[in-house]
Length: 165
Image (tube, rainbow, N blue to C red; front, side, top):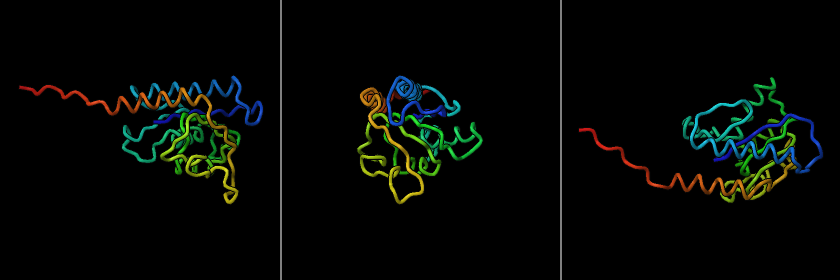
């Protein structure tokens, strides 16, 4: 479970984490928290919808990219910053490069699929036609705590409904 929020505002300082960046990351964290118990669709804000949509590509980053591109009327999001609660996977990291995202702020590392710095570094690979500036570890403890709670709830046995007579 991850969530994402976009900002298309002018950058205050490159790679700085100030109140503006913390506010966007808090928005992404709030979206992640809400995702466990509600439906879909807020423009340029998304959460992972793989299960609800039966879509293996419905990661928060991909959905946020789609919504941001629709809202901005262009697939080129070169003035956009993306805020995500967890480090993007290879699919999402590739999509960030293809969308020309300006800057990625993310919370906690993903030791199983992280493609921004943990396992791979796709978004800053000099062989690709675009590089994304990366600011890792923004509110990482809060994001990691939220993810642990989410996966803990998933692992709890679900009550079986009573049989009808």
